[in-house]
Length: 64
Length: 213
Image 1 (cartoon, chains in turn yellow, blue):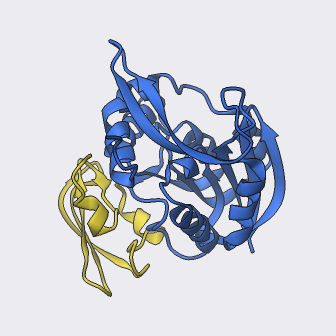
Image 2: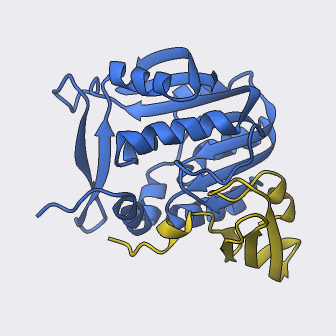
Image 3: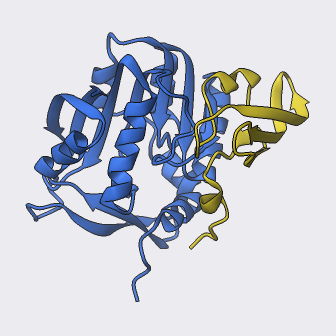
């Protein structure tokens, strides 16, 4: 993902800002890292360049 | 015993069929192209973007676009397809009934063939409320849903069902659908924070052009 996506996205739960912690970048894109809600502290993973912004209870649901 | 329909099973299904499904979803729907014709904006949003075929239309009309899908497999196909075709937009795995999108930032949105996958009326209306929340004051969106008007259904009232997707090799994978009757679809839109601007039934689908109410 590109860093400027943070202008559009927010925490799916309380809609507050997300703070980026990038651990791997490539060609100006964040490949791996986390997005953390500045209000509730919930953390959302970025893997293979794709942020997972599902609410945590859906993220953890085992595939049926 | 039939599996309880839920978001997790819809997601698992699309994760499983993503590659094959994507190959059969090459082109944009004409109704979506018609809605987008002449419209533009700063930020575009595709809710339930699948392989991104409609997000690509938004890219041509908006400065920035975000495509979201519940299925990680589908998001991955959208990423690969956009890279191959040179379309530049953002992607995220997300849920339509709890959009990770800021209030009022979206100018143009499509929510196509996705609403029927949400497993309860409560969640479907919640997703329409979410769409209303993220649309700016002048924002417009197109919402579509498979309807009882389609030739393959012989019922007049909306109902829950599963529709099989057949993978190459013949394996069948079920997908949950709520098939809307047109009046019920209009009622769900009215129940939400959206205002109906235009409505049509075309090729067995209900289409609502909406704005925030």
